[in-house]
Amino acid sequence: MSFEVWQVAWFTTWVAAVGTLLILPPGIALGWLLARKNWRGKTLVETLVTLPLVMPPVATGLVLLKLLGRRGLLGRWCESFFGVEIVFTWRAVVIATAVMSFPLLVRTARLALEGVNPRYEQVARTLGAGPWRVFWTITLPLAARGLAAGVVLAFARALGEFGATIMVAGFIPGRTATLSLSIYHLVQLSRDHEAWGLLAISVALAFGALWLSEVLLRKRPSP
Amino acid sequence: MNLEIAHLQLPLTAFALEMNARLGARITGVFGASGSGKTSLLEVIAGLRRPAAGRIVLDGAVLSDAASGAFLAAEQRSIGYVPQDDALFPHLNVRQNLCYSHLAGKRGHRSGITYEHVVAVLDIADLTERRVASLSGGERQRVAFGRAVLASPRLLLLDEPLAGLDAELKERVIPYLLTIRDEFGIPMLYVSHNADEIVALCDDVLLLDRGRCVRRGMSADLFAISAAPHYILKPD
Image 1 (cartoon, each protein chain N blue to C red):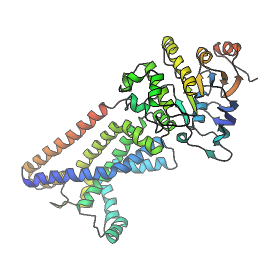
Image 2 (image 1 turned 180 degrees about the horizontal axis):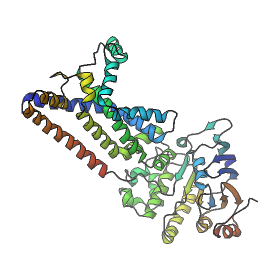
Image 3 (image 1 turned 135 degrees about the vertical axis):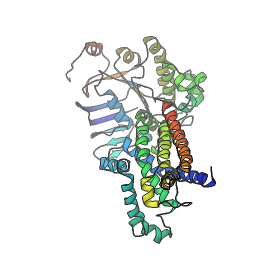
Image 4 (image 1 turned 45 degrees about the vertical axis):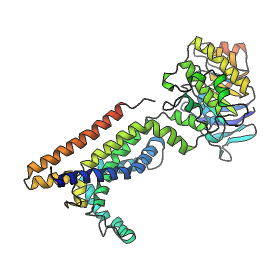
């Protein structure tokens, strides 16, 4: 396989990893809020967060394009404050993958955190531990496997992102070309044999990620 | 110990927990049928639930006062809590469970509570490197007691700690509770629906029925009445 193929594979893995890392803290925090607290607007927030999971990815991409474009609310702000352009750059790819993976991470994080018996947290508090110490020493370790499985699922989702990415980042070889975008592009040009190579890498990466997620979930202890 | 519970109210699903009592015994039993509000009472005292009304004062310190909005967080109350299912942290070994409290092994509200002393008194020195999943029922309870004691609590709340044990194990664990009382001088509130346990351990007893204290003090008829199936008690 050519250097370009490996470069595309590396870029895809890298943006998927960065996107997943970006959503990790807010994803776990929101999962915890949904799992442990009752608050006004909870259902609304849950619905909004889940939207990208059920909306056509291209539609989500269009929303992102309008927000992050030069004349968009966030795009204008980023350009004037940081001098950073978002759309049609690798940043747009990261944001698109992050937004599309976020609902998956929040949902798995919520399930993992709900699986932790609140009695452990209560007893830890009676032993003098404040909310942060309880979270870091009890909740997080007990939910770790479920959370790790959620992270892997979000990463796998990010690897295969297409619709939102093509809208907000376009297909620019060497700049925004991911595995899925490149496969689509090559098939359009009838260069199927090259697309097969990328397909093989996509399948291997996705299979590895999902297999790891299954292993993590299966080994999850029942506290 | 002087625990004052005044005009306490906590709405539960079918009824409200209502309590007005001043407790001072070394071990006070809280006796009653399942669903009578015993666990909720302990949770309110521990600071795990916020009462709708009333005031709780322990040795002069206000733990909660609905009228003024005062509510001391559970982690600041120095009140130990051992639930029915012991709730040993499954990802930590026995020693890590015992040392979870930042006060473990240090001088807290009660002197003489050191790690070595507690593991010796509770006979758990040989278990410290074991995973909690490998412990038997009796061992688990002793570790749970030790963990709570090592936090140097002013008061220890025990929620049916022997409920999951067979009669023989219960007999072996009860002396450890008496040792905790005598050796470390920690007053306890002991929830149970087993009359034998209450008689063996407690100096005073409250009988709870649908969230209300309907009898107070040790008496033979208290257990005779409550032993009858589907007993119904009227407040005195």
